[in-house]
Image 1 (tube, rainbow, N blue to C red):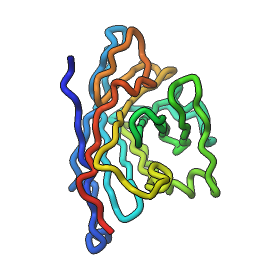
Image 2: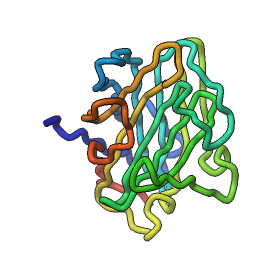
Image 3: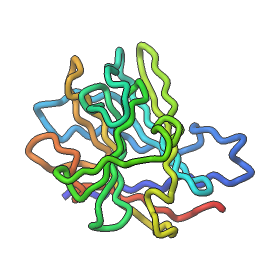
Length: 207
């Protein structure tokens, strides 16, 4: 049995926001490759930061010539070079999947499992609502976005912990790959397995 992966989102105080840098935030390595058929592994990591009423997400991959064909929200970005954040806010009550490619095309759905996903509707386009930013070079790429805590925790209270996983994939890239933060024990690549999520500890929250 694998030891449970844990991560504490970095708490950003009001006075530190102007000087905030992701260099100060601990990284969660997305480098577990559970499936022998897909041994390729690109160096990748995730970072989370809490600030006021928002959860900030930063994802990075050292992936030369990353594939980015999808440009619209809720497209099949997992077929491109893709970085993903899955989070289950309340135990057994469904989880969100946030999937993004180097072009900033974001897919967001919610449900109990793979078969019952519902796309999340927002009052403004995803790029504006989630404040999406991406960077890309010939050697690597990154994506950053902000999730309102009210979306994840609609009852208004942030629990002390939640369950989550981070993924790196590219189903139709030159070198198909499937990587995790917390190991997934399945016969074939399958990220929709909340039973194999790690734990986020929300030990601090700034006003």
